[in-house]
Length: 296
Image (tube, rainbow, N blue to C red; front, side, top):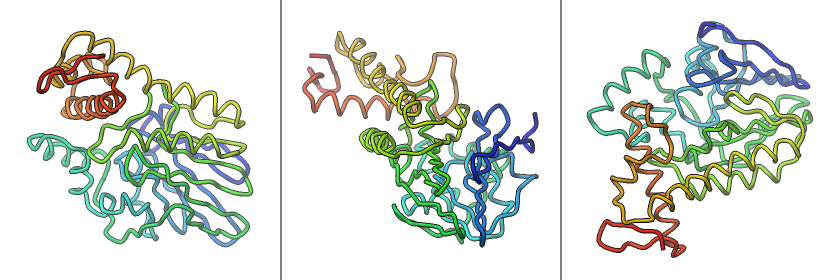
């Protein structure tokens, strides 16, 4: 399946544009929402680069390359949460937010421009939590869900009862909070907020697609959140003897040993620090010497 291909699945009046490989990265799932007076697209993915449905505006859940690859297909107003506005307007800000080493930034910039068509949208405007987009008989309400990025947001579409949770995507990989601006605490708070939203359907950006029913969604959300605890348990086990942060990075909490790339070490480092900070504050880990940590 090529990058221009997507299949459409209907949920009420919400069309899910399912990307190649069920929306697995680098692809993604987009939405088309129609009302009586306007329509909008959420997260135009690679699949919308050459085959984009018409829309009056675009909403972006967060400024990561796989969620904005198809933006060039739209000469209409574009909106994103204020926390991600700078990254959507400027590729340089987006790449800086990934926290890559300087020697990798240029190569990643070239890749994003070539593979994901990232050019920046200086015309983009920001929204805040609770903002409502009225399409005529159908509303899309912003639900701010930070942690993955500072501005990461979901969208509740009514009266259909469709809640798009973006990269709280329920995959076995688990929550990703490894960017320079990511927050483990915020991600966990966002997952708790998702549990409180009663909807008929819950749409994800990648692979898991659409989950029907609040009970099933919460069951899968709990398993997704459980990956955080598994990482924490793995770290505590590794800290049975004193270790440095560099050793934790080499041990890996996030990626499997065969995964390579300029992003791996920075993500592993930030993830390790997130968990170390928490465990230190809880007294479950102690710094036994400067830069040397052990489970208590």
